[in-house]
Image 1: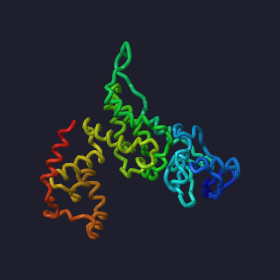
Image 2: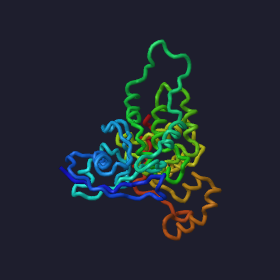
Image 3: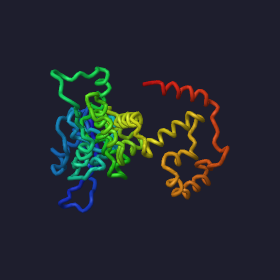
Image 4: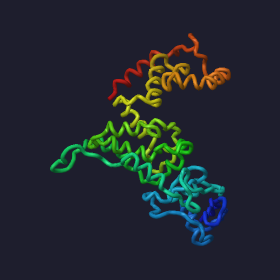
Length: 318
């Protein structure tokens, strides 16, 4: 048997002006106990006012997502012994980027609203076949990863872009979008990619990998976003800063073996943006962060021929 010490976020909007934390010591837990086990025992035996959401306790329903020690996790899948092998205090908070209803329960409205925005359903063109639709097995194997999503909201909770930009569609919705757009039965692929390439879409992800780290089902939302970007570029949907950045970044590396930071911002964001941010650029140059935009300040690396060869080989791949 083990003992657990939990510092739990508490907030009742009907009587609390500000959130606070309560600390609980939970005894006589089995060695295999999870964070959810401890929280349920607190609610049932120590403090009946504690509010949380849970259901299957088998990492299937996605209901028991919390922030545990600062990162989103499924409470039923997170063992206490792994978090606190020596009895360390464990901090439990509600999910981030969502409105707190009470204690550890958050509103999923933001999650579902963003999911609806990507139209998560397949649209078929023409008359349906007499029997079933036939899809290559290899394609469905590829789509299995985004299909593993259990809608727990962990990736949305810890999305660093959504923290500063509420317009961002967020990882879960974009991963679901790839599941639809990548399906060969989906007819309006280009139309979907046009919508996903707008502000708040696939090009606003900063690739911090937080969604990949916290996903309990290895959906790797960031990887699905990158696949959508690749499809968008193939469809020549490149009239945005994100796509231009990727294209010119690749051109720079294939040309000299390294990124030319002098010209990349101008080519990606435009001359107007560059002029507007001249002050920031000067400060960066003075601090040695970037090289001045002068002839001869950017040169090729010694291994540039090998880099060009690798780039050529990658370009030939389908």
